[in-house]
Amino acid sequence: MAKDTPYVDVQNLSKSFGALNLFSHISFSIAEGQKVGLIAKNGMGKSTLLSVLAGKEGHDMGDIIFRRDLTIGFLEQSPHFDPQESVLDACFNHHGEEEKVLKAKQVLTQLKIRDLQQPMGQLSGGQQKRVALANVLLMEPDLLILDEPTNHLDLEMIEWLEGYLARGNKTLLMVTHDRFFLDRVCSVILELDDHTIYTYRGNYSYYLEKRQERIDNKRAEIARANNLYRTELEWMRRMPQARGHKARYREDAFYELEKVAKQRMEERQLRLKANNVYIGSKIFECQYISKRFDDIVILKDFYYNFSRFEKMGIVGNNGTGKSTFIKMLLGQVQPDEGRIVIGETVRFGYFSQEGLQFDEQQKVIDVITAIADYVDLGSGKKLSASQLLQYFLFTPEQQYNYVYKLSGGERRKLYLCTVLMRNPNFLVLDEPTNDLDIVTLQILEEYLQDFPGCVIVVSHDRYFMDKVVDHLLVFKGQGEVKDFPGNYTQYREWEKMGSSSSSRPSTPSNTSSPSSPSKNYRHDDRRRLSYKEKRELEQLEREIAALEEEQRLLEEQLCSGTLSVEELTEKSKRLPLLKEELDEKGMRWLELSEIES
Image 1: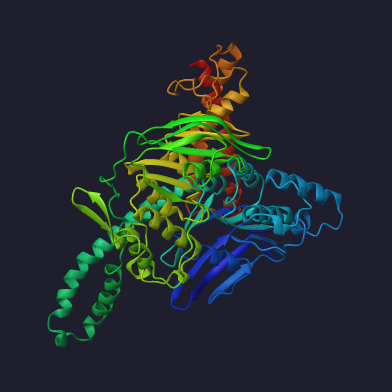
Image 2: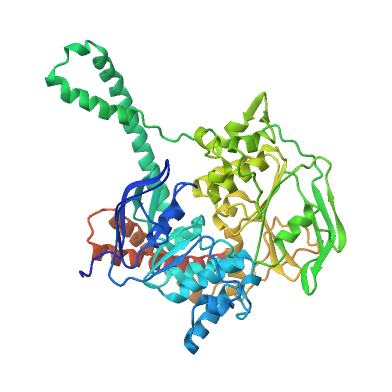
């Protein structure tokens, strides 16, 4: 078989469930070494497409052609295991081969699964997903197909997986809502929209830019067709009996034009801004609270006074107490010592990891109207239940679907709408980004940016946190909590500079007084750059500029459509390596610049 044969070649693939058409006559290919991200709204068939490619589901029409002897590793969204088998046996039948067992231990340890003899039935759903991920990685298949690989991973694990997948010549197709992950790992984006597939040969940032160009061009095409359609419609209405065979071509063209003119671009409403949310000056105060479970310390003498209109992010590894802290705030778990005082005007809206149990036979619109018929936005404006659902991308047709027909992501989105319909003034969101599509995440980000109350977000989604929160509580484990005045990216940069430099940078100046026992501080003992470091800084600036120019040219070439498969593969391999080198040099430049300033 020819060397440039794609790993996977999909030709005119179609799939539907009854009257629901997921995709029609889609075609794309994946070359060796390409790292491809698949993006689509909830319910549009992302997981189904992955299952079809992995051979778990059939399809209605079309062909899927794999390179001969290709091995595939498939991570399902909800994997299933024999509850009696051990973690190690669930990974693979190792047959006592020491090298494989050692490798399994290394990967599982990175994913924080340490008891390899523990029965799978004793693991949580999140732990089982991590074992499934380890299983796929240990197979070392030719093609990795991953459905939401970052779900149930903490930030440390996500960054490890990001590096693991970005390195080397791995070939990858994945669905993920983690946009940082997409941006840093993938060099090709496939978008499934309106039953059609669109290919963007670049990372997530490039996709955003080119997608907007596509939408703008489509809008212009529809506008032109509408103008011409009005003219042609008049012609069609005039003396239709006089039209002869010579005009037949014009009549046929009219019907083709009509199809274009009657297309509808999905028009988002204006940003949803509520002016009728009131919250008093007293929000909540954690008065030296402590909590532990056996030997695991969650909080120790923790003091915090929450400010009005504050938007706080909570981050930390799994098991450090983030969700327990939220449940204490909401009164679901009591502290061992101290107390939490809540302001009288506070109305919590809580979006939990567990979600809401729905009546499967209810219609979507009835789930919302059972809470309220409308939300009062203030200034005489009201938002109806149907309008709220439409804002979060439930079409009028979908609103009258039964709940049992919804995908997992659509159920999470409906649950979110039930929280917002209660018109809270303090939103507490525990892992809100899991299973939501990227378009919904963008809408939720806008909503939270404009929200006139208070917000606490617990999330491993770095992109989402950067967009929404203005400072962080970082749970380090064993009761250690750091208060950082900035977003997640700023915190990581600050942390890396502190750990890699011989001097430890001071806490940013807008951090509150060190009288609070929950906060950790660093003293300012900065030094001057040495002569060698100054030269290194100058050299880094030149190298970064050259790498950025190389990246720009490389992305242009990848999008030109003129490259051979061999050239495309070679340049696709270079792009993530280039980005990794840029990241490393950028971090070193930041470190030296901090000392210089």
